[in-house]
Image (cartoon, rainbow, N blue to C red; front, side, top):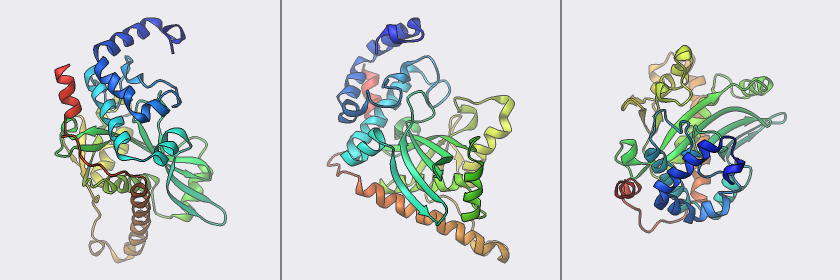
Length: 306
């Protein structure tokens, strides 16, 4: 891609100046086997989209922070997963984490690479019914030091979105097969399985007011989709950007529920358990052994010295 191919050449020049400022980090990014194989083939074909003027992952990130987040994500993906995983997620239609088929309908949770023009996360867990999207939950692997947690790496959830215009019949199918359940919980059950497969006991999730598309005029919608949902899962506010959700996520004891609701609650939890188990086993089959893990904040330290 050249400046002549960009819709706004001035912005393209500014972006290239940012690339020069952080050339060591972008050299490191370009040396990753994952980026060499799939960087140019990814949706949008631009591995440096995070250097644009718009927001990336969180409102108000500096260019330095955006570089840190991108490098930590792709370093982690490159080091922890095998070639079959990378081919499915970055070079194919995605990696199936769980699937449930009936005589009339097919449901699948799939791990996909988010399009480059989508700045709400680098990976997406998608729930599809009969080929139609019902829900998407997106995340990026970030250094624990950057996220404010005592883990080398943690998933940072930056999108929780559902209800597409063409998905009405698919939602009806979901409600018929999984009554009294929610697509958002299916996606989070898979997210929990991903984290637990990697030995992580917590995730970080974005606050609604830090979301890159946050609109104060639509506060109620954003609060319900983000902060409200994280609280239902047992999440607690960390700072102005994020919530901390410990795993496994909170479940009200069945004995504390009215007896008439217990059977339905138990069935919901069985669905979530099956999703988590399937996701964990799938990820474990696609992981590679890591002999030595770089200390938390290694990428951040490299930037401080740049």
